[in-house]
Length: 386
Image 1 (cartoon, helix red, strand yellow):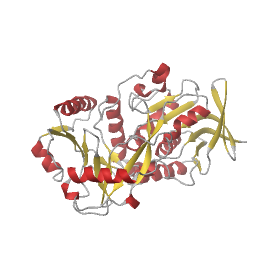
Image 2 (spheres, one colour; image 1 turned 180 degrees about the vertical axis):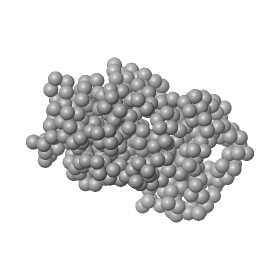
Image 3 (cartoon, one colour; image 1 turned 45 degrees about the vertical axis):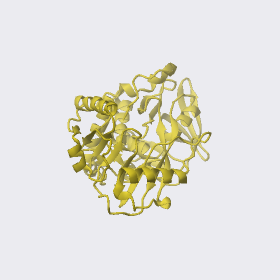
Image 4 (spheres, one colour; image 1 turned 135 degrees about the vertical axis):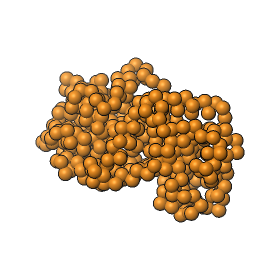
């Protein structure tokens, strides 16, 4: 039987960030287990790489501000370019109700420290994104320091940095059993090995709820399919076009590697929560929306071979879960970011290391993210509306 002081389940961006930050704080014998054959085959590799501080709850804004600080020095600390490009996020309100939601969120952002975000006039909006059809739009809200990051660069950077300071990664290592005694986990088993351990970190993304069940705990994280329609390589939209989002239905798009990436939320596949199969009819639908809202895309085709589906890890209040499980004192969660995991991964890994080392987070007050908030089905906060 083998031993690890900490077993991290999940080698995606959350698990890699947690592993690096724990080891950087002096934790020894840290082991990461992942069922994939290599890094980047889970949700991290399917993320589009957006980054923003424009949220409607203070804790999410503060997570973004800490993450932004870490992204700015990622190259110096980790030795890899995180791909952080401040192209901005542009939100478009199509009604006074939507403008009101964005104004309320703007007040939260400013109070939490993201003072660069602002409401833009329609003339300004037309300058920020000249390609957008502004018919029916009443206002825009812009975050100039928001933009884009490289999910795989951050993942591989953290993985390599963690390995340099002693973290072990085991691939093709699906966790099949978690043993516990007297409210503490004692062993974690894969199909090939059994590890005695002092602590476990659940960083399993959309599968985090299933890992919690193996440990005899309850974590309300569920998968939700999200699809991305990629156009053929194009030149009508510039590489630094801001992420542009229509509030009314959350249609949004960015440009990456010359392609426009189109996103439009739809339900998952009934009865198959982990199925991320791409729907071809959805590609037709999202393409039609894109051409109506950005007329310059009229002659630009969708490339089904370059499009894909993936999974978000959702919680009831659309906020991350960070900290110790109420049922198991040595089981810690870093999960449930509800579509914001990549952008907050640098911050959440550091904060989890603080919680596990000091008993509480010291950089940001993340008490609102405590797993205990779900006790008796009650959440401690309203869902983030952005």
